[in-house]
Amino acid sequence: MENGFEPQAEIKSDPIEQVELEPSWNAWQSLPERWQQNHGSLLMAFATLVFLTGIGVLTYRQNQFRPPAFPDASSINPAHNNALTALDLATGEAANATEERVLIRVIGAIPSDSLVWLALYNADTSFNDPENALVAAQLPIQPNGVAACTIPISQLPKRFAIAAFHDTDNDGALSRNQFGIPAERYGFSNNARGKFGPPDFEEAVIDRPENGETPIDVEIY
Image (cartoon, rainbow, N blue to C red; front, side):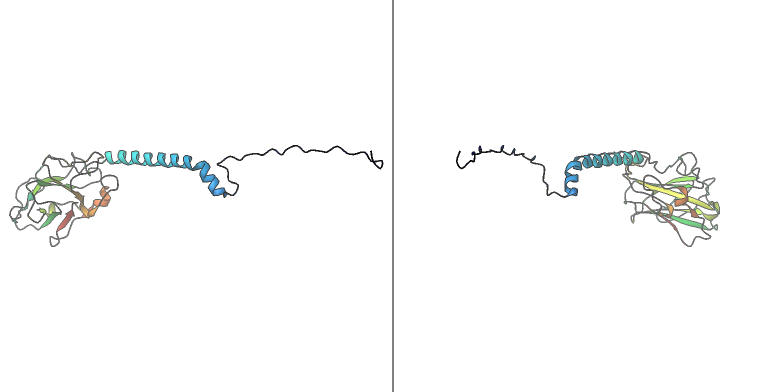
């Protein structure tokens, strides 16, 4: 001891323990980045589920599609060599030559030996129903892709709808693909088109014309 002071023992501090952060942790990441990192997989799974559900619903709705219905009938007269002769809707017999009639044209068929099927409905309850169509016919296709017939105006109901399709394979039915979507050209009066099947009667309905000056056109595609 020198000068009355006792030397103090050297004090050594414990080493500071170093903590390693996880490689995925970044203190400078923004909250949105960290949220996306933690929940991205969950969002992807949810999006996949929504997508698959949508595909399932669409497939189901397409399979519910009811094609235009065409019972076995021949109440209207098709056009042959541009010579149009009217038939009485009720009897199928030739109508009075002086009786005013209207021309119905189905436009958009592919010229061939196949036929265009046409049906006329007069009520919502019978629309697209094979047993209750007012009249139906099979029409030959002219070189310009039009199939036509004439009907006496007096035989038409006040309100009616027309459905038509081009039977390209001559099997008597509207062909569809594996998803239930029509594979042949079809259409309705008033250019009605349903999103997941045929349109409603009110969408396709038209009024009986007062005269035969203007033809009734139904586009198929």
